[in-house]
Length: 168
Image 1 (cartoon, one colour):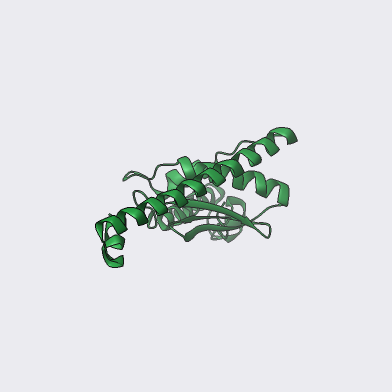
Image 2 (cartoon, one colour):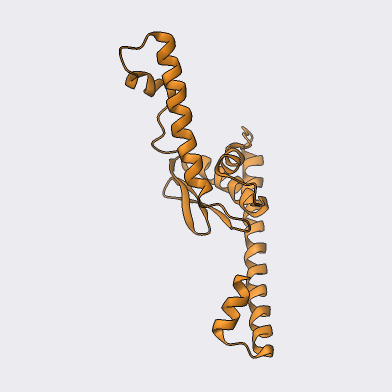
């Protein structure tokens, strides 16, 4: 899931040669945990309550963003697999509540929980339902923006006042 994160097998080759087998295994485990924690921490730095998640699949590459900032990218998969994964991630993005307790590890683990199906009909159903959900969410956002514009006009708010209220 994390580009550039070396596998334990790769880390074995980097372990100091002076270590015996048991110490090498400990070194590899410690290094892997440290590198993974750094990835989680980088995501945690972008997580804040109410932040919006989004997922994308473009040119064979999956990515996930928080509030428009990419946190996971460079996951290359074929078109069929990518469409299925991004459909699941988009559903997660619309249902996953980011709270004060949400951190990078929790979000990453949620993204890893994917449905695996050998049934192409189920895969296509999930992709189609996610597309329908996206259309509904877009429609709701547009209607909400229209309602806010009417309310702002009724109250005679300036652009700056409207932005201040929108930020909360």
